[in-house]
Image (cartoon, rainbow, N blue to C red):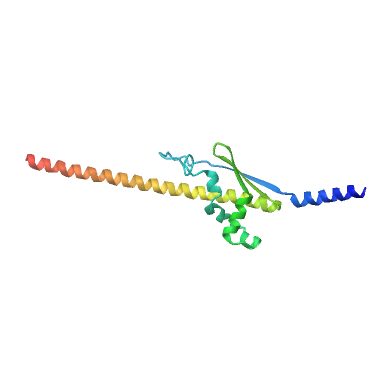
Length: 165
């Protein structure tokens, strides 16, 4: 009887110390509806969305607001490495991703998953805005080039008219 109680107590302690919580935040990427000749940032490109979510740029935005360096007693790089070790990103549909965070602390897992999703959303918006700026520059350059060609052709036409007179 005593041996059974010790085994049960030991199993209970092991189960309690090994308990981990998983929090999942789902994010759907909805590209801007502005007509575009190029795909939105990193959709169908060599950089995967999963890689961007787990990038230093994205995770640094998580570490600072949650003050993980202070909470965990780590520097920023080690805090980001710890987040990465807790993070799993899975594509669950077209432009739909599950951001899973596993931790022994239920609230920590929840806050990390949501903060990572929000950080990625903000990063996505910034990248889309940068893409719009880049496209506007390209369009402005193309219009300027066309205007220059028209000006050059008008000058050439004027020269032809002058020679004919």
